[in-house]
Amino acid sequence: MVAACSPDQDAHLYGGFQGPQLVGNEAYVTVSYVWNETEAQLLADRHCARYGKTAQYIPSITSIPTFSCIAKVAGREMKAAAS
Image (tube, rainbow, N blue to C red; front, side, top):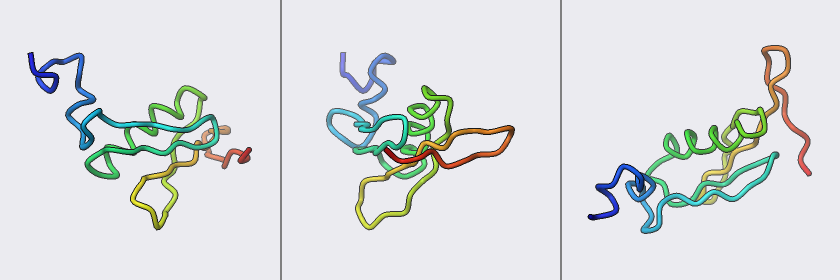
């Protein structure tokens, strides 16, 4: 079975040979090997949600989308302190 056809291997449908790669922690995340920023946003939101936060895109001169993980406070969002 080809990896891209397997429902368990949906990561291989992204731009990179090995699928998307996320690097980060509770304060930020970078998302490599995706087709566009919209797909990167979805993965960053999933990463930040592990910490009870949401992802906010940080404009950058690099081609690697970077996001801050923003804490939710009483229905509003507040920037998390960078560590």
